[in-house]
Image 1 (cartoon, rainbow, N blue to C red):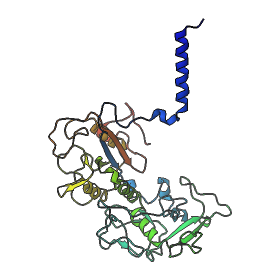
Image 2: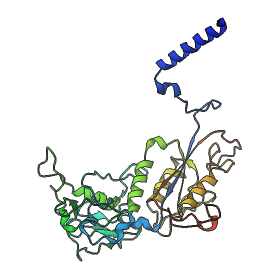
Image 3: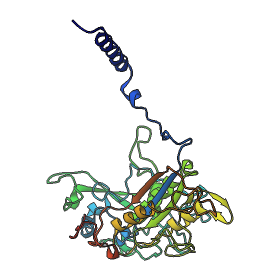
Image 4: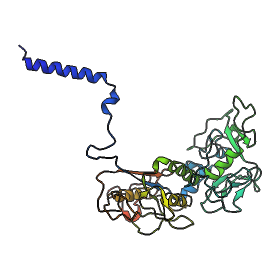
Length: 372
């Protein structure tokens, strides 16, 4: 004989299971972003790390392509993914005020394209309609590019190649030797050279698009700086507390004076602050963009050391730490936040290439980690 209490318990359990099954699966796990013991959403801390190593000067990806510049494939996005792609609309990145990055200088153009759109110094423009040379490497802060080995001495109209195949051709694979030159078709950039569409049988005018790519995306450094500028212009970051660093330079979060500088310009304070410009004397957002547009590119890639710095920084305490009420803005309160969201984002071309990360020792026990 079944016990009546057990029978009623089983009935209740069955009812609960049926009710739960009727609720959409996701609704069962709708977790609140606010911890149970916190009365308001916790603030967000973001440390942004930018790669300033020597490989950022490259106008190709991956590294294997550095010895393939004699082939047509090097100037085709079908092989060199960093080269101009006619199917991508390249946007001019914004500055701190939301204006085009080269402001107050004129915007880059096809007949006067800046070698570095973030550093529009006089005399650093190229007429892409007649004097274009495909870049192999370009150092930030310098207008002296290294060009592909087959570049015309005086330049030529801007161009790109597209893989069209043919006898003996196989689709290009970026980490292998490229197909022969006969497998590619050359396009000279013009008012009608863009890919044809249903409404444009002759193709669209891609001259400005090519100029934007040339000034802001043709090297790893330019592409990362442009991507960071676009991402950090999001108005949703206005309440976020932001700090930044590079792998080799601008590598401290504890200096009490402005010590973060690029290849030129005044040093700025990269310590954690709310990502807004408050006044003429408090301009954290503008300081970030000023630094970003002057990040150098040299030396090695000690990525793990930069990650370690960020982790150590997130473990500090005090009014100017990531847990202060208003860090690095003159607050004297000793109260610390019980809960914050900590994030570290790294923008890099991928591999680290140092073994023991210098003075920090190894990150792999007693042995070396190797290159990854």
